Image 1 (cartoon, rainbow, N blue to C red):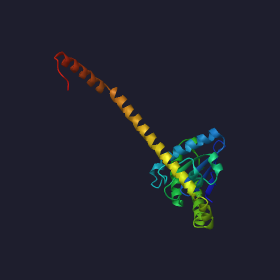
Image 2: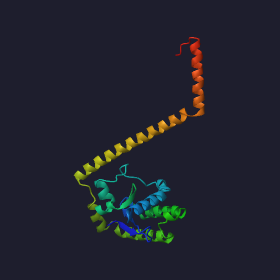
Image 3: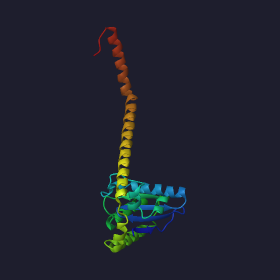
Image 4: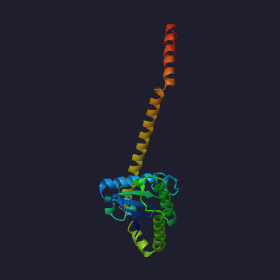
Length: 222
């Protein structure tokens, strides 16, 4: 069974649970919807300050799936978990004690430099206790009959593999379309800024004057 542990503190009556499932670190925010959403946003804000520096970070499919059979069988332990506000931090490799410890310590560093609403861990001792707990769990779980039994239940059937392939293709297509739309919006913004700049306007006005002068002398513009 994957590793699960709750944080000591609750924020606005929100219980926060850390979970490690294979190649994913999951964070669950269980409680009233608005408070849970706010807690998730604050957590991902702190994570955003450092997560891109993790070399092992990334989805094995080059795209993150927030639904579908892969998401359920590989990134959750049951369907009920999907009904709770949560976030996923996917890795290209299995999350080891070293990777988990690095993630938590980097997170805590950011927590220390932020305000009250961003305080999730009571102190550095809690972070250390969680990393030690995972290390003990990992040593006992890795290669055990329990791990083999759990992993066997997450293997995709032939039909599920086809469904997953379709989900990936659709997600990649959507991702590509969104990228094209962002690039188009950027080009439009650049064009608008250039056309409204004093230098561009001045040059355009001078060209209009030159065109008027050329017209007087019957010049043909190539």
